Length: 157
Image 1 (cartoon, rainbow, N blue to C red):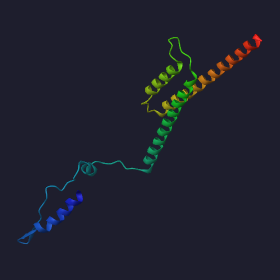
Image 2 (cartoon, rainbow, N blue to C red; image 1 turned 180 degrees about the vertical axis):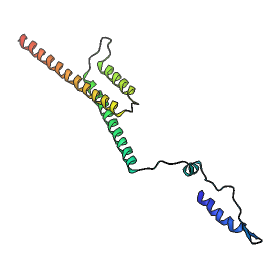
Image 3 (tube, one colour; image 1 turned 60 degrees about the vertical axis):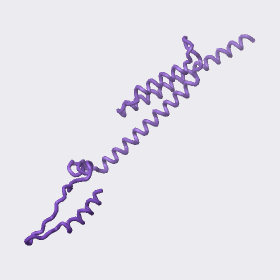
């Protein structure tokens, strides 16, 4: 739009020049300013100098956020996979699988808008440790159960 205005200004100036007693009069258009608010702000607001350091910093921040987001999603998927092994009901008759999934969802939703990278990393590491410890305990209990069943089977014969 600015180029169209400039084109019209260039056309109007020669037409509107008149000579009176050796002086030249120019018609002054009302609209000599910026065409949009963005142009006005660009013209009058002091801008921060962009440097390569800022771009690199933004890129590293984006990569870090993408990385932690990917890790958080991976952790959530691992939790969902791990809950498949909890098929027995609690005292109310609700499967432990469903209870664990609800609790995991609740914790992830509570930490959803956490911006501090250190806190996010701490939560992810704590979640990984908890999943691994839970699976280790489950495997140990299953080994004990299998050994107990074998012992009972041997005693019956």
